[in-house]
Every structure is written in structure tokens, then in C-alpha cells.
Length: 131
Image (tube, rainbow, N blue to C red):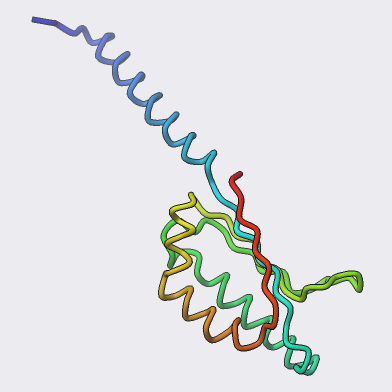
């Protein structure tokens, strides 16, 4: 029969907390960046393009808190230099590759993509990577 002293129980508790912390840290290390560049339909007027950009920004940034594993979303719609060949950039961070797969199929994301993005874009480039 093993008897634990108060200090040995405390040591076991500390070791358990350290193991939990290390497991969470390993998960954090495998976070994923999901970067998308879109080119808007050139047939849109400048005013229409601005309205579409604002809609894309509001729609995608509004997904934080709705989609599990989606940590951060920034949609860049202004400050574009003349050397650019894309109009809108999505820069998002997710907890994991599994979270990215869930995000792609999430009904709220699909609704934004189908109503605010796809009807107005002619080109999409994607880069996903671990950070």
C-alpha cells in the first residue's frame, strides 16, 4: 500500500499540470494559416467592387466565434498597390488542419462563400500551412 504525503500529492499534481500544458503547447504549435487571394470580376464598377469587398470582409470576419477552431480572421481590402494582381486577401488562423477541414464545410462559411465571394470573383489562390 502506497501512502502519499501532502508534498508528494502536490508534486504529482504539478507533473500532471505540466503534461497538460505541454500537450496544449504541442497543439498550438500545429496551428494552421489559411491564406486566400481573390481577384474580383473586372466587369464590376469601382463602387460595386468596394461594396463586394466590404461584404466579404464583414462576412468572413464575422465567422470568428461561430466556427469551432477558427482563431482569427483578417480580410484585407484596402491599401492595394498597383503592382498587385489580386483584390482581396483572407488571412486566417485555425487551431489545426482538422479545424481547417471543418471550417471548409461549416454551414456559416459555406453561406458566406456562396453569397458574398463566389458570385463576384474570377480567380482564387490558396496557401495553407502549419505555423
